[in-house]
Length: 143
Image 1 (spheres, helix red, strand yellow):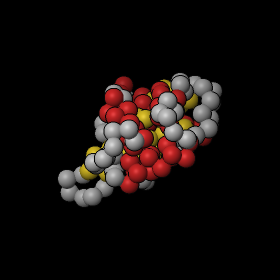
Image 2 (tube, one colour):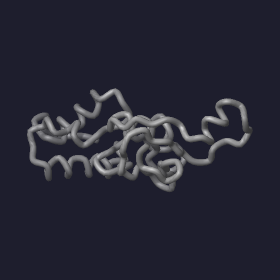
Image 3 (tube, one colour):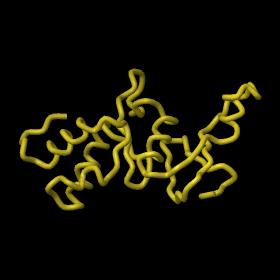
Image 4 (cartoon, one colour):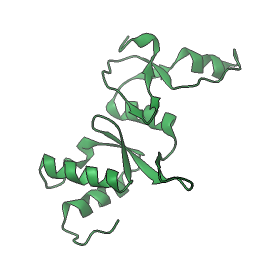
């Protein structure tokens, strides 16, 4: 993605995105840029259109790269790691779900098919990408 002016908000947003080490980016990470909320929204939408970011929740974005085989953007580091990092970046305390714990302990050979976590603090957000959704165990939003 080529930007013509180094003083533009788009150029500054790309530079800010490159400086962020995490593969998860929150909307508030771009608040320090000199621009209105609507300008920042337009820049983020442009990054999504150029397949540099994907939206996984309200104000939550993940860095992306293009698949070699299809023109679909994939999340850097994988979906499960992105879901965990998103919860950590939001300040939500959680632990793995019971199915993941049983598999890690060797009590079962059945691999958990989807990402389920048990929350220890309140979280009312939906985090998803494509058909993959982050689920909360026993449909409880907080302990």
